Amino acid sequence: MPLDPHPVNSLGFAKPPSETRVVVAMSGGVDSSVVAAELAEQGYDVIGVTLQLYDHGAALAKKGACCAGRDIHDARRVAEEMGFPHYVLDYENIFKDAVIDEFAESYLAGATPVPCIRCNERVKFKDLLETARELDADCMATGHYIQRMDGTNGAELHCAADSSRDQSYFLFSTTKEQLEFLRFPLGHLPSKDETRKLAARYGLPVADKPDSQDICFVPDGNYASVIEKLRPGAADPGDIVDMNGAVLGQHRGVIHYTIGQRRGLGIGGLDTPLYVVKLDPESRQVVVGPKEALSKRIVPVREINWLGDEPFTSRPEWHLSVKIRSTRPPREAVIRPISDTEAEVELIVAEEGVSPGQACVFYDPEGSRIFGGGWIWRGN
Image 1 (spheres, helix red, strand yellow):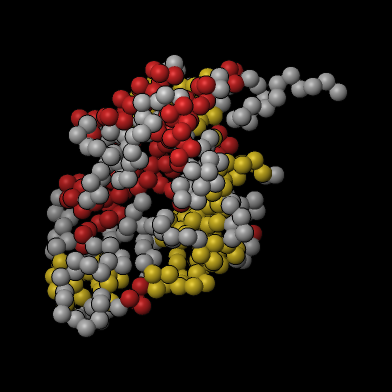
Image 2 (tube, rainbow, N blue to C red):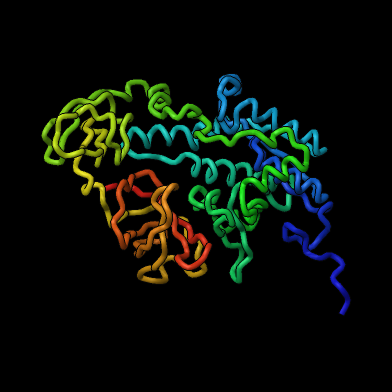
């Protein structure tokens, strides 16, 4: 039997790297820069693309924002050093419509949104991915710490090898079709130190650039000030009430509070510590109660993206692990489908701070695979 003249390359295509076009989503940070440099060094036909997601002039003055003017400049420098083309695409209107406006509305409705997930879902893995296809790319690569593996039923999503860097919580809404086209070259690395070593090896100008910590359009972490600018009058004051409706004090706007918050309530002098257990924007009330009132076992979830091999509704229940916050480990749960996109999630052990607007992500309890997830849509 003759040997295959075109063995499968590192991106999974049966042709030489030089004939494999890959669009790399470049944020200007070290992760995506290393992905682009590594693929260019391996001989792939690399095209770097950076998204301008909000006002460029305003962005220049904001350190730590992921797609600010400085980051566009850094991405361009990496492309010049490694010798591949680089384009900046103006996605400001798309980003505002698909991410920022919903972020504001969710906050005003008393939810705690996760805009980075919506950005991946509606901008990077939708519009940018379509742009990559229009550029005749074979695939699109990003610097996310997550793994894509070929399974018996197509591409599967798996946690990163380095659990401390794993970004699966923010990528649960990646569809099977998108997953076929996406590649995540950093997911197998044992640590972020390895990424920085690669950046130094390639001589990249961003090798020592610090990681961005904040949401790109909220670089100082002050969500409330952003909401007030987007929706003037959003910070109307109201009552802080207990679970029986008794008024305990006044607040300076529901948008300044989050489920589980204890400090800064301004209602001292009580024997029992109180926590925010519910936000009611319609009545402009912040409801507080004892810590045990935060514990919940039943979590309603909708807008589910299912990545399992069998249809979601093919079983009455799924025994998986779930994450209800990006910073918490997966917990054992029973997921009961209501429809293809809605379910009731029962936590085996109650968790505190279950908040509408957060994601509930499904994991294999005995492995690394992600089975999708959905959005928590009411806290009580």
